[in-house]
Amino acid sequence: MDSVEILMSVSTPAWHGVPMTSTGGSGREPAGVARAGEAIVTAAVTVALLPLGFLHVSSIGSLDPSTTVISDYVFLPGGYALLGGAAISSAVACVALACGMRRADLPRSRPPAVLFVSAAVGLVLVAVFPTHTPGTTPGLVSTVHRAAGGWVFAVLPLAAWLVARRARSVPAWRPAARPLAVAAAISGVISAVFLLNHVPIVIAGSPFLPHIGALQRVLYAAVMVVLVMTARATRLAAERVHDTAELPATPGLRGAA
Image (cartoon, rainbow, N blue to C red; front, top):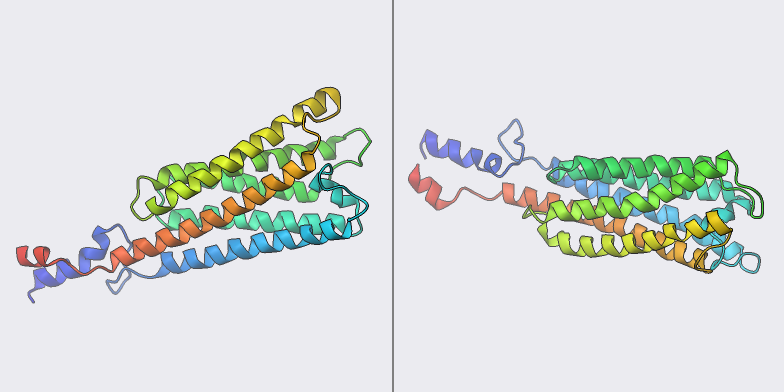
């Protein structure tokens, strides 16, 4: 093997857009980080769901989940800490997704990443600022809580949809484009209905749909599914990029050398 052939065989991974290590290999960092990112997102979503499940069970007989929004669980014993922990865990998942997309070579990843980070900020605000007591006039703290919660439900489906759109143009991401787009669209429609249902509350004091609590829980579940699907898509894309980078030089290239 002459020096030109050696150079071409070593350089092949770089032609596929994967950073090379100092020893000339493609490196395993992007795929490894993506696997860790998926694990973080999955764990964070699980941690976010557990306290909510406990609050649902502990409030049986006192709160109707079909008409009571999740934020009202803050008035149960330990509710502030449990809801805050759930929100912070979801924020961790959003930050992990924002960090992972760039490492997995998603093109124009900045807009969806910014939306995921902004959702994380909104979730922190939701955790810190609780809602007002039912039957009382909303104050500044409650207004911050509602605005932040509305922002989270609005931007997470949009961020996932932006990821799905960009995924269509990249072979490593393309298999996840359609499923993620469908999930983002479903959660987006539910989010729009839920948020628009608050307009009559502001104007007339009551929602258009009476079972707003049930609608919110369906939306919450849909958003959690979107987070997990985005994390999985990121991990699989990073692995495909890594696998492509490890392909050996083709015989045609070697013959040309």
